[in-house]
Image 1 (cartoon, rainbow, N blue to C red):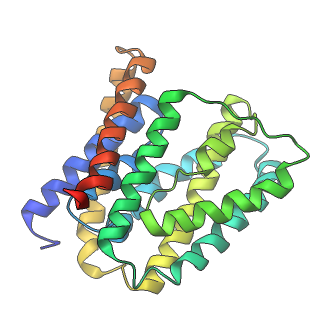
Image 2: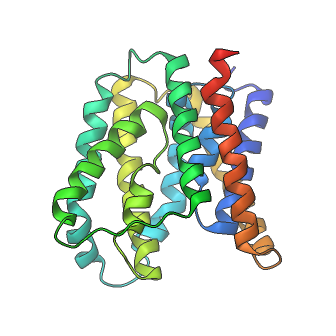
Image 3: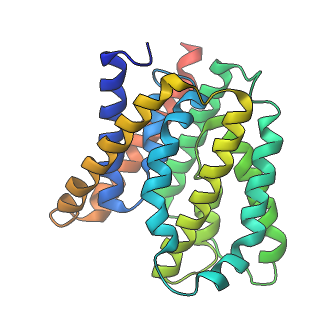
Length: 248
């Protein structure tokens, strides 16, 4: 099934859309792709497919820009928390019920979309950051293992740290790389990284890299704010569908 043409077509379509979204607004590749693939597979399997595209598309984002050492020292408590939370969560991954995992995936997507639509901005005091960062990392790692989504709560939390625009992009890339590597290790421990997912993962990478340039072209023609609004509306509807499908 995982190497059938029909399944590959689903993967290519999902990652082309996700790459397009990332090209327009600069984020959303794992979130969109895992959300869409969650309609056909478990979140753990979807996360396994997304690993290669996530690593390749975020390496440049993580390393581009100066002052990387200073940024790494500041982000270290969050990154360590992500790793620890991921491995604590991985204890429960092999026996996770796929229906419950999909429900949680939908709930997290809906929450992420609601935060995006509300445009709520948080601000963390420098005095609280050393204490809060490990907690946010632990929560992010556990949620990531359960749902495959890397964004909650690390994306809103990193925004709250008041980085300038360039450092914000670099900080997000660094956190996503850490999350991706930790998730890969957790999936390997759970036995979810299987040979039959290699071809879909390569196809996903190619589709994402094809979608991103088109997204950048659209960015120059459509107001990013308008696209962002419809992106979060669509993500909210997708999340609600995944969360509520077991009830209907």
